[in-house]
Amino acid sequence: MHIREFQKLIADKYEQRDRERGVPGTFLWFIEEVGELATALASNDQANRVEEFADVFAWLCTLANITDVDLEAACEKYTSGRLEGFKPK
Image 1 (tube, one colour):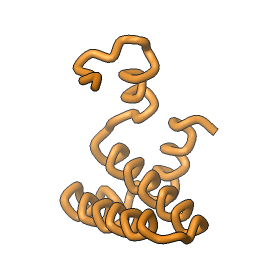
Image 2: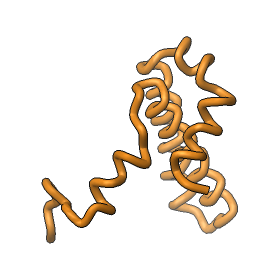
Image 3: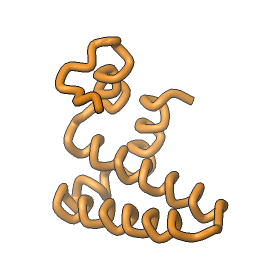
Image 4: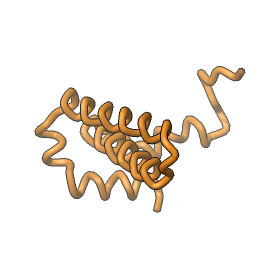
């Protein structure tokens, strides 16, 4: 599945409710999921890590949907071979 397909799957299922919640409320849900991912990363529970990565990605897609950002197109920053603004170590 491509990123765009997953983003559309999330939109089809949740976009109306997410738009009603708005960006600030949705961002708070996203941050909560990032916190859960942080906790999972500190544990030895690989299944929980996988679940939390999925949740973070789904909420990122939700934020992208309600702010009209195509994540697959946005990722072209990294896939186009032109990493403008990239700060190498």
